Length: 383
Ligand code: MG
Image (cartoon, rainbow, N blue to C red):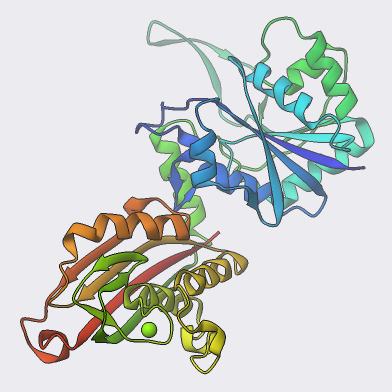
């Protein structure tokens, strides 16, 4: 059995508030869609992941999620008007990838766990079609004009969840035969005459629809939240030259910074803050100054190494705050460029990065214009 995962993320989802579709909004520091993808990528039986996007979201997806998650390359395709159109587009994309089974999951369910996915896979293996659900325990009322008009028997009623699992040929044919739209893939399979097994869902596997759901999901995540903070500090002396490089931005100046690499004191502080949060030493340990290959090196090599290590250890960067201490050059006019450059390297939004500057009131070595100091704080969140 070769299993493909299909994640449906083509909706606009603005009901949850804000002007960004809900699947791209951060949930305890990590976008909802990234959490959904990671949850499925973590399951050892899932071979490929295809994400169905809204046609307007390609750039947003690449910026926020990127080309691969958890060592799995992501395939993307564009969805249609209704959810069932998007699933059909995704299934067409999966066809020919070598999978014989598919798990179809809503991007809005980021808290799905491995045990639930395993239950769906086990049942799908036996029956060809299976989906998770939770028995309804609340009393169900029929309402009319604001009053209770009757009670609906809840025996045999379930709340449906995803991922829903199917033999690929079965669900492909069901979607081809579908007349009109189906609210989920179980409906499509049943309309084509297939039985669908119910497996035990999870109360944590909530669907994020409105603002309250974000708060509930963050509470649920809070139980196993792991947040790390690190700091970094660096100093480089001025020497002769015509520019300095700070956070990767070249700034014309009547002095240069002296150092083994490009002496980007601010980027070094940010890099050390990331290493610090991981308890993983510092730049000097990973890139010894005694090693000639780092002479004159652009410091983004060091920062990218730290960023990769953050991801490998299962963390996401929540925010960075960097303060540059000098009398000259003026930092303010370049701060936005520095934030954007760091955002590109770190793979996070610019509004999660702060670059600011202060003088030391002409006191000390920075006050005497002998060099520049920088300090940085990084916060990481376990994903
Ligand atoms: Mg340094």
